Image (cartoon, rainbow, N blue to C red; front, side, top):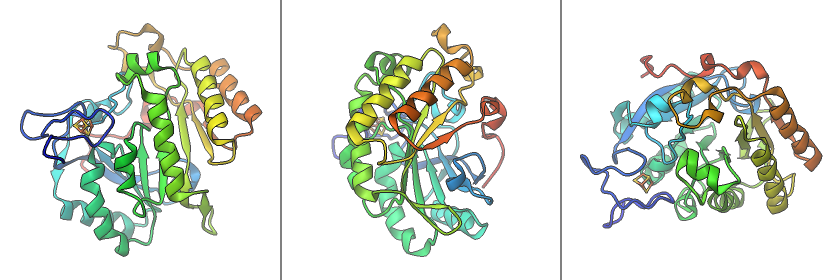
Amino acid sequence: MSANGCTACPRECGKSRVGEELGFCQAPNEFVIARIARHAWEEPCISGKDGSGTVFFSGCNLRCVYCQNRVISHTAKGEILTPDELEAQMLRLQEEGAHNINLVTPSHYALQLRPLLAHIKPRLHIPIVYNCGGYEKTETLRTLDGLVDIYLPDIKYFDGHRAQLYSAAPHYFPTAVAALREMLRQVGRCEYDTDGMMTRGVIVRHLVLPGGRQDSIALLQALEKEFGSQAFPLSLMSQYTPEFATDCPFPELHRRVTSFEYDAVCKEAQRLGFDGYVQERESASSVFTPDFFEKTF
Ligand code: SF4
């Protein structure tokens, strides 16, 4: 936090994050956490058989209108934990057999996480995963160099107009590309242990949205042009669930992604030479959204 308020992410709100003076992310300076539990529904090399040790941070610097985690992302609903308490929870996840510590939506806490991660890293024998929406400030990411082992950015939009409509972030794509370049610089190509679990690297995720087929294809083409097709695995997600967007003013978001839309994006990824993951269509259900009202810590 600078004397001029928070500038941790590309929004550079300049808010103190104290009391009522909150920025776009709606989060105070203290860690507000919604859920800490092992989670089975990440990519197989992240979830494995024993689950990924997820820590869901409340608040978000994107607050997408269709967010499936909106009960915690649109307001910072959760419990305040001190850094010591959060470290203890991470160690608990490790003791329970989690394959990694998976920081979910951590971007607005990146600067607070830096000293915590530096302190806990020597006691962790599992990787630290930074699982974000791709809207990152490169200077902030640089402070995590050597502390994060795996980056999981969900790169959401190519078209700035859609990024503005759905996430109030018109400069989303160039910002995400710069962030991805920094992530790749830090951790390089993917590495796996003998069980096939990822130990280092970047997986780029992309959630295909209803009505977004052409933008998804343009996004893949732009990523391939920028980085080539072998710099990272690509994880194409079809899990969009309209239940979370019923009150948003964009009728195109009030339905599921069709097989035609999802298959067209998968085919383009294949044509461009990307390797990675596709999802079963059955995953487009709200039953796969974690229960944020369950007491997990
Ligand atoms: S982290 Fe939050 S308060 Fe800080 S610049 Fe980003 S949106 Fe604004």
